[in-house]
Length: 480
Image 1 (cartoon, rainbow, N blue to C red):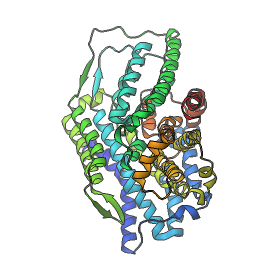
Image 2 (image 1 turned 90 degrees about the vertical axis):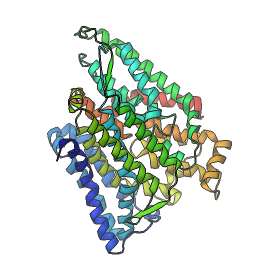
Image 3 (image 1 turned 120 degrees about the vertical axis):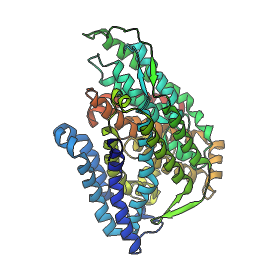
Image 4 (image 1 turned 30 degrees about the vertical axis):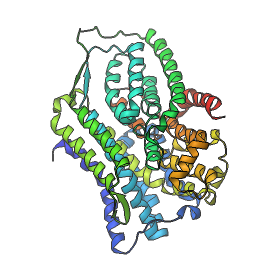
């Protein structure tokens, strides 16, 4: 098998095992449409989720060599720690939930990431980029501006390698990669449903496509503060660098592999199509899936394969393209998605679940902003967004059909939807797992020799220092 396709096969091995189990379930009469498991689930079912988060946080610190070679096994261990007793306890219904999260969430999620990663990896930016504070600021501005249109993953994968190459001569680079994650991997994706998964999920449930431009004021505030802080930090460290930038060789800025922009547009078009076109549904292993979503996924895989077939391998090598970052994300999130099933189910049970005290405490816009955002920092921000969107709909329009309730919410209590959307998107920057591009950028930066902070180091040294005060200010201005 050609190396260029080996990664795609490796990424698919985990879900393939789940499908084998699903075949057994279908043959034995298990499955169904899932039920209200959340109301009866004890909080102890969240232990595997906590376990995988602590593994991600601690193993790179205490056993880095072990983690580098066995992170996939660790992820599988925690996934099985949840899956085996969960299926034993709830049988067909429990297995259905596992199959459902793979078919409806994980597989589309990893296909989108793989396609964007593959296509963006075929675009090479060369030329004299000095890594000065002004150049770095401009690159962050560009990435933040385009993230809402090509997705946070697309913008991050387009710009992270040129950004790292421009600063390769500099000694202090950790904060640069962290602010790249803040701005391009998260905050920049807040203006359209193409930018970040929770906004796209809102679009699928009836939020108008351009409504998300209502977030432009808080988005500009957060971006402006972070860019200003970055520029001050970068200028301070730039003046204290012991080395000097490489002499300009007179080469002009050049972009190779531009034909990949066609495939990037194909990905964006495929994602948008799946939200606008209704082609009916099919039932796969007991799970109803929209045909439009299957067409989208096939189109995204085709865009990635076309990029591989039409882009010279030498270009990808010069772009320092490897499969490791996307494989790491695929393996770790395969475990994360499974282990968070009980936590999401408990949240979806609302006040009837064991986390009902959280749902019951959500009353004001600032509550929606912080609780949606806080949970989105550790859970998948798309379903978390949906949980609190439904909480708001239940509070303001009980019994009203969903799409009408959303329009009523926008017309009469729009600030609540703004708080939910802003919290889900902005606070994905709080941790490495808050949004998938965070992990990918961290992995690519480490491959390039940047010493990235640990899981807790990222939170303590950067999120709490730079993000939380900014979000407090956003709360005071917009959500009080």
